Length: 108
Image (cartoon, rainbow, N blue to C red; front, side, top):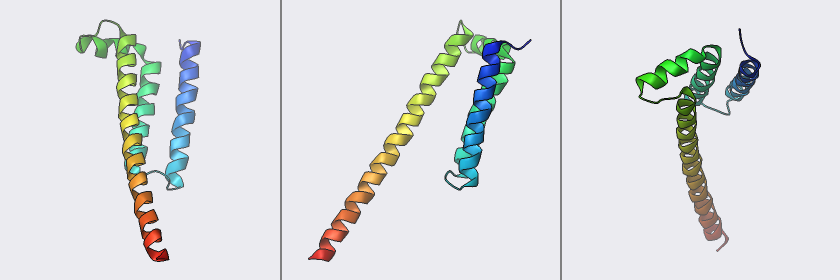
């Protein structure tokens, strides 16, 4: 039987995936980004429907508790996403700098 927390997680994962789908349809994210988020939310769904799978994976990786596997994976994902945001911010700052220089040169 599915526990209450699993139901909440499933509903949230479906909601989050639907947001990614809408962004993809609006062409606000690329196909690769949509695939990434589909993989993430599908993994959440599978693990919430079959928690024993997390135990099996954690055992194979030498991690004692399945919840530790979830925490480690979440932290790694957050670091990766933070890196992606940092790279995009740096790119945006460089583009703004180039535009400001170009506009300054045009005014002279």
